[in-house]
Image (cartoon, rainbow, N blue to C red; front, side):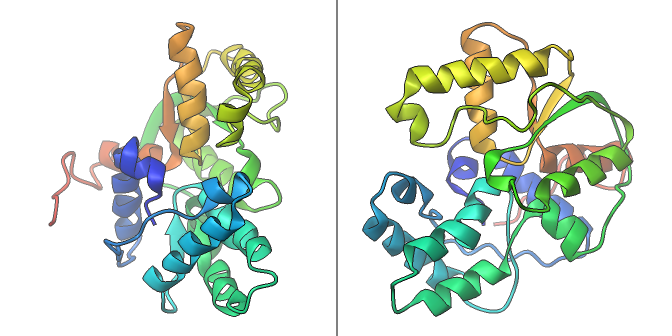
Length: 247
C-alpha cells in the first residue's frame, strides 16, 4: 500500500519501497484501485466515513498476502484504529483479518523476513524520528537495527526523542499554533545534533517537520527509511542507479 502522502508528495518513497522489497526477493503487487487507510476521517470523529474507506481497503487488499505499508500511521490505522471503528460492526472479522496481515515496512523487513543487517554504504550522520504511531510496535527498533548495520551511518541520539512532532494529521489543521510549537521544539532537539539526514518511517512527520524547517530557514534533509536503504544498495552497485519503470 503506497499511502495518500506517497501518492501526493513522496512518490520516491513508494518506488524505493518496491525496489528494496524486490531486492529481498518479494513479488510486489500494487492494486491500482487502492485509496486511503481511512485515518483522516477516523481522527476527525467521522467514523462512518472512515468505515466506508476501510471497507474499500478490505476489498482491494483481499487475500492472504502481507500488506506492507511504508508508513507507521497508516499501518497503525489498519492494525488498531480500524478495529476500534468496527468493534460494534458486523464486518469486524474481515477488518481484523486485514489488520493481522498488515506490516509497517521496517517491521516487515526485520521481523517478517528476518533481515537484521543491510548491505551497502550510506555516509551520513542520521537522526531518527520515532513517530507516535509506531509506539508500542516493533517498527522503531527494527528501523534502528537496519540503520545501525549500515556502513557509514552514525546514529545521533537527541533530546525528547519520544515526543510528538506536532503533526497529528488533522490535529495540525485544527490546532495550528500548538502544532507548530511542538514541531519547533522537536526541531530544536534534532538540529542540535547537526544531522546530515533526518530519517523517519512516516511521511506525515517528514512533511510537517520539513515544512516548518523550510518556513523558518532551518537546515533539514528528511529521508524515508526506504530511500536510505535503496540508496545504500545503489552505492554498492546492487541496484541500478536509474531503475526500470514498468507500466
